[in-house]
Image (cartoon, rainbow, N blue to C red; front, top):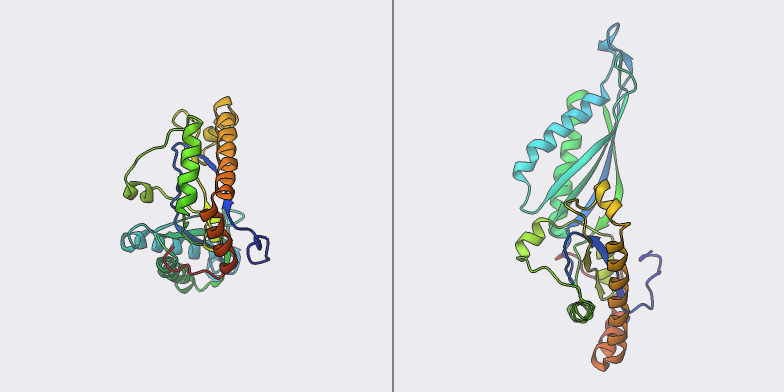
Length: 264
């Protein structure tokens, strides 16, 4: 959407996301998603295993390599994924297998190194088994999020006036728990904020089924309404503040999807 011009003429962007904590600014990791597809040769596992090329084994070798790689990853970097295809029957050597993995890092620059390491692990599976390998970028690269601090200040003041209370944790701890978002790319093009708003989830956390159920609660409805109101009031504040209005107009006219991402 960004590259297609959907944000052209837009001078600011905001959204809130449910969470178990509450922050007006949002720190995220850079991310890229890769799919590794192995092609081998199917054969009967008992009658003619020597005629097969085990694509499932290629995926296994890659996963072992990734597990060993984790000790040498850059601080803050993460690699995690799943097997999306591994075979059809126990008595048949799989001729096809697929892995879907995400790589994350503290910046786009560091992500490039982690991505390179992940690809080498995928290649190890192919080399070890003789299977062929095809790698595709499943998730477009996300940068880290660039918070617009004046907007953060307006949002926090407005949310606090509604009774919202923000967590105060060391930045190091927050970065250690950081996820990723495609809105980070938008934040490099135009001034943006992406606050997270607390939902009482009774011990559950994001991406757990229990958390999804609590997001349909009265407390979650209240959080969504108050987050929406705080963003609306922030938009009003930005429009009424002469200095901020001029700044956003100027920045909006000079920025775009090619904004520098190396440090985010």
